[in-house]
Image 1 (tube, rainbow, N blue to C red):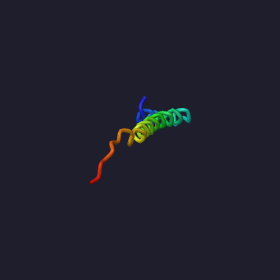
Image 2 (image 1 turned 90 degrees about the horizontal axis):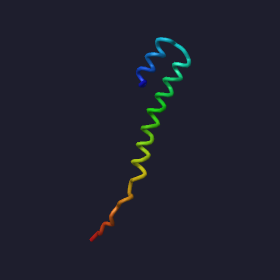
Image 3 (image 1 turned 90 degrees about the vertical axis):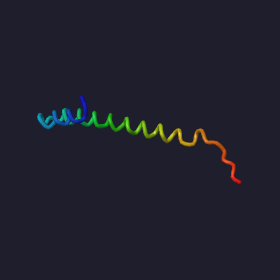
Image 4 (image 1 turned 60 degrees about the horizontal axis):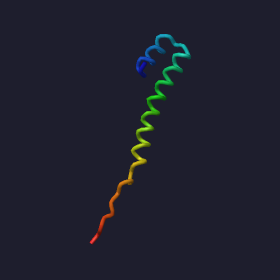
Length: 54
């Protein structure tokens, strides 16, 4: 179930459990973005070469 489907299902039913399901889908999606961002930052500067200035 994706975020849109979860939201639409909650809007149809109005049940708290359906809203919590929507939130869990949304948080899982956002957690994936945070992991990607963290990996990008951790590699920054790992393979730098010395630059000779003249």
